[in-house]
Image (cartoon, rainbow, N blue to C red):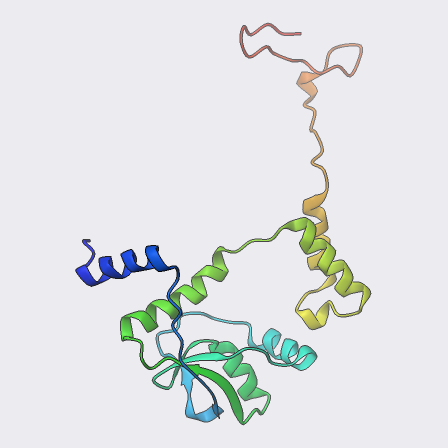
Length: 181
């Protein structure tokens, strides 16, 4: 599909100037004056978000386009269930529908694509465990154990057919000539 002239122009401008900051109007609004965007396909873990808010407080803002939450729908639901009457938002009504939809989908997708540095993840979870904050951060001891298991060196498996009679020497084959030794 060919890009439109305006899209090509926008991409060229981005390459010259860096990322475009969307901006918007920061405000606090009644929680019932907004609702999740009806096309948001994400199924978030609202109970985990509620536990996090209860343990550490709410941070950030929801991103709202024409009364629909396009970033933070499950944080909105968690706050609503916790009895919040107001919520901080960034209103981006100046965006077109296509951009708003793209932001909503991208916000969901980029978190799917993320991974962890297992060593740093394990160290962080161990500190949370020591502070008795593992559960408050949405983790269980099994989660820490799984990360630590990833860091264990892989055991070398020996096949019985690879053993030489009279000892535990492994049978090796030269990849160049096929000689077995």
